[in-house]
Amino acid sequence: MRDESKTIRATAMFELIAPDAPVVPVKVELSYSSRDPYAVQASFKTGHDTTVDWVFARDLLGDGLVDSAGTGDVRVQPMSDDPTRIELELTSPSGHALFTTSAATLSEFLQATYDAVPAAAEYSWLDFDAALADLLDTTARD
Picture (tube, rainbow, N blue to C red):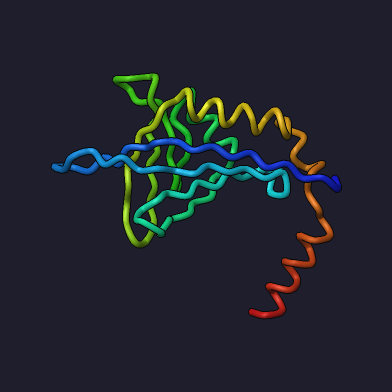
């Protein structure tokens, strides 16, 4: 565990793709914190003051830049007809959404996260004592 923390933020424009509807631009705030070194958060701005937050595995996004990745609620892959764009498919009990975004923008953000916390070094940023305490505290409340 390290005492310092690093945070990386970027804004990206995604496009919501819906059948039989025009493409809708969606502003997305991407963030990464070395305090949660395996994850990336994406906050989709859905209204004037509302967002929908998703948390993805950082490696899932990285893998999805070059090939199809993900088998669950989050799937990422290069677009078959335009490799400069990435498809991001999100599924939850409340719905399903398909987005596209610039592969270069996503790649630049991910590179900044890997510059901050290199791949395979994430464990050195984890506070195992705090994580265990949170887990035990959550279990005690259930």
